[in-house]
Length: 366
Image (cartoon, rainbow, N blue to C red; front, side, top):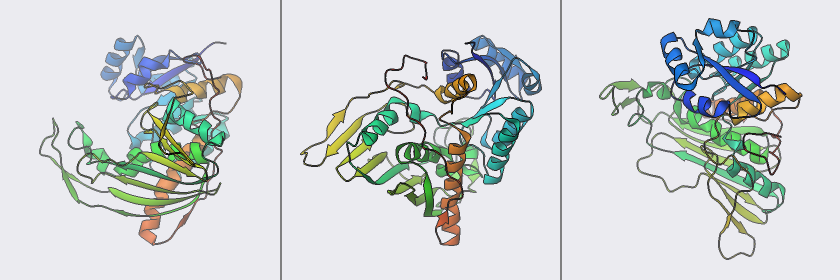
């Protein structure tokens, strides 16, 4: 079966790992990249043996069946829509889109065109989350009762070369890192039915202390400390805390899942592997659990490769648009609940992604 030919739009920092990993997968081959800055696209293409071109040229290329959209969040929707209008399947970096309205436009156009749409994060396909899913499904902690998720740090202005967008609409800790945590929770426990929470802008202005913009001020336009509660359709109640306002290195766990017969410490969903610990009823200490699945290193692109496999075979893909939109709606729901002082009832749902099978060879999906 021939590989799905893929073009990348957006050649910023994150594009490198997609290009390194992309063509190793059995299901896809990255053949071209494009950017608004065509010279930058050509430089990146030369580095990875691809063809560099303009966005218009890439979208007009009949060889390219699928686009990986790595543009900035504010451009996610417009580029996805352009790719779909050009007859290309499209996989986009997180967040899916900035607004719910844009997300629905993308899903509706894809359905109308008979095309697939997918979205990062794909870290839930790594060995850490996949092993955790297997433990829950094999009843190692009994019936899931609840979960907690924590992502707290001091913000990105101390290290990122251009951190402004993290504090503008579509940014903040919920939209920047929330997709990793919420996608992992849905993969572990299934879809959400309602959310609530409180959110605030703790500091109305941030000062960049990284280079090359040292000393510049950034006006904060989105909440930077969000505490939320989640009701899952399967019964458990979750809590989530995302913050750019915490000083020092927090000692909080990343994700814990609580069951009737035990507790599971799940690895950081910002990575693919990581340690897992289990405390079963009657135990006197934690047990370290070996990973049962592969993709434990930086396997970014595995979600796109899984979608390419779906294009080849007609099966469903795991990091799909319905999952990404469900997470997007929940992130907005936390903000809405805080603004309105009431629960936000989810309007969307999604299927719990199918787990990866055991024993996969490297860079395969089935």
